[in-house]
Length: 157
Image (cartoon, rainbow, N blue to C red):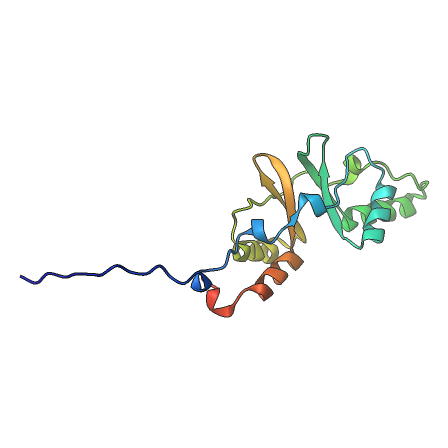
């Protein structure tokens, strides 16, 4: 009868462990995120987008719950409509123009899955939701920054 004995195995060196590749670690957190309110004027949003050099952002209610997204494209639609109909500059509120059917991301989602979603859905940003509340946003730029920070040998998929 052959008996096999395996001695105690040392845990892998912490430097050798996989890096965290969850969205939670690579998103823009809510504390650094520019958000909008549904009752804001579109003119105010356009000004913010230009001054902050961003292309859009989440729309939240007073409790921090996501109610939509507003983007440069949403604002441009109103600009074109106003020019076509020769209407005054008052272009309505964010609620009139925001996207309300928003695809959100769980903070535990893998960055490579989200990269695939960006390519398939052709979106520029996804709100990150935890327990029904907005906790951040992930953009294509966040994904590229995360990948640049990973070591090649740590990529698994």
